[in-house]
Length: 135
Image 1: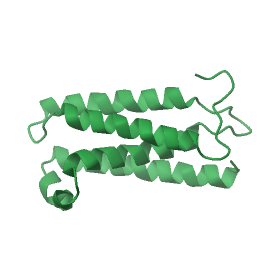
Image 2: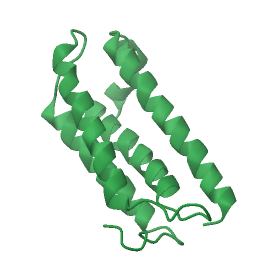
Image 3: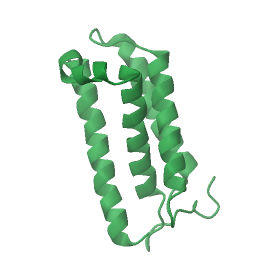
């Protein structure tokens, strides 16, 4: 991928990461019901939201960080996805400690499936190749 595309992916990744942080904070403060009321009209509701949000996050971050540049060989899709999965898992389990939140294995499963789907789509993009020697 050319450097302009990598720059766009970096911006998209930053926007997606900021979105996840803002959504998490809104839910932690108990504002989720009002802020995400539109999800009641979406098939699968919250679970679909988890899948879509984390698919987009994974797609953006993997597309950005896995691309080789003149100064970096790129990170492996597996390592990036594993890191994101660890962060998402910790965040979901932390919900058991937050009064306004509820831990859900279904939400965690949808989030992890979304991460995997986003990484797979990123790998299928033209010009996408795992870094040499990367797992």
